[in-house]
Length: 304
Image 1: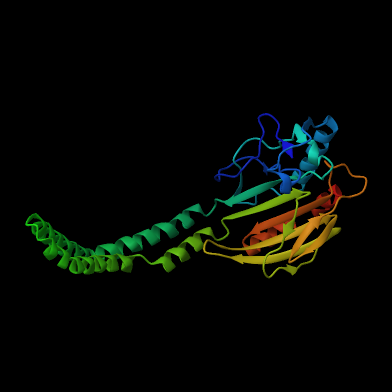
Image 2: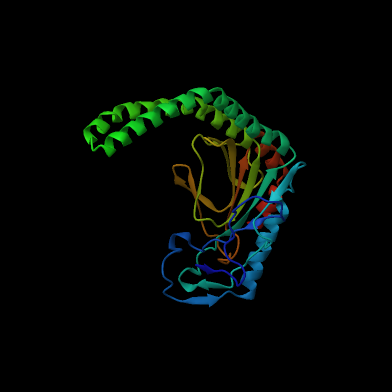
């Protein structure tokens, strides 16, 4: 279990903005024990260990492409690399897990994307204005019934007021039905999906992760030289339509149901490179372009 250096810490993406090259997320040495107590106490990491982690992260960084034209690299902080200063002795012999995510956002077409949302809002506003007379009539009907109920209650004719409740509920349903005519969830979802199309992409490079998983429908794709595995699959959800491509280098073993687990390499220190994964996420065509721009030869050399 790593203890982050002073001023470092685990860096999380909170919002997109223009920034420097990449976000580094240092993970626990053994994620399965990340929340467990440290029985053997912590020790300071050595200069050699910190240098090894730094060297690996810099090698990873150098293999990734810059933002394509019309895109920016987005991060949450100006810190690039945070190397652990302390670690738990319980797990010091287990390969350390660390890596980073470089996230990108398209900005060249911001005006046309924003117009999608503006047009959707304008359509809803026009639909609401068209139904305004009906809405006002329904409101007046509700108000009249409420006033009748109040008058009856003042006379302590609670039973009479209660008899008007079905009429009030019917008027309320009428009002809500008119509002529902304006609210078109399918159209809103389609607009949001169009807004998100090819808006963001990311490359996550992980060293010695506990496990890697492929998604439903994953299929083998041409693998770079020295790659242990290369898989690609499509993810369709309410917010977007994207592809994911996963590349594995180094020592891995199949663990069933589309999962892979790293295995320690003989003669390599726990802080060194045992198993490396690369996950590219984004629009299908964008993933293809991005994969072609990654220097997989450099990444493969890290775990040789």
